[in-house]
Amino acid sequence: MLNDLPSQATAFLILFARIGSVLMLLPVFSEDAVPGRIRILMSLGMTAALWGLLRPVVMPFAAGGDQALFGILIVEIGVGLAIGTLIKIMFQAIIMAGSIISLQIGLSSAIIYDPALGGQTPLLAKLVALAAVLFCVGMGLHHMWIAALVRSYTLFPVGIVPNLGDLAQLAVTTTGKAMLLGVSIAGPFLVYGIVFNVALGMSARLSPQIQVFFIAQPLNILLGLALLAVTVGAILTAFSVSFAEWMQTGFS
Image (cartoon, rainbow, N blue to C red):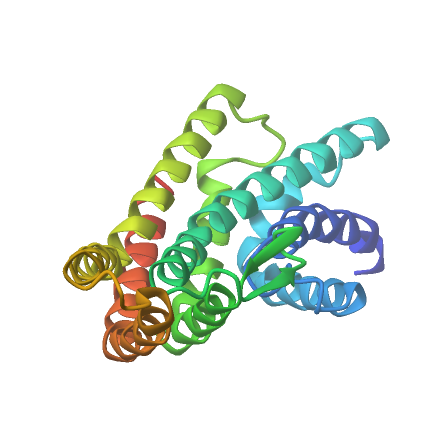
């Protein structure tokens, strides 16, 4: 048993390289609010949990030399970062939808610093994103993240460098789907913005002496928040279902 300990440790390190890289970029786990030590401990715990299932996959590569091990670790870290980046890009759809909603109801100036994006983001977009995370966890979508991680060893075998052109094309396709999904789930607010602004323009045309801006801004926020309260459940459901379908089809 002790004679197999070095190879077991090497296989665990190979498994940890990909799993840890993915978890470093997953939604919630990649937030700067989560300390780095906590993320490392969670990655180690996830690796230990999947060790029994994925051990036969990585054990054949544990007997190589130092140079082979270094190359395998580099490839595994790269594959893990690629998978985590794809998931993170797709998750940006809900943040994009929240930004569109903020713009349409007049709350785009209420911004906070978002460490995950490295810049400022509307407060309402951050709130919707946090609600989406809780909603996805409540629906069990995080189990699909784990299943996708296990399935990645079939799509991207250990030690084999994936086609960079295919990965780039997949990233472009995922970005397009994320943008389409973000605009789609924010569609009711785009319609609301058009209707409200047309009505506002007609009111200003009919009664030029009325200070339309001072009347319209509070009304816009009130109606927009009321519409959000009515549609937020459908928005989160549509996002979760679309996200789950995207992962079930192998990120395509």
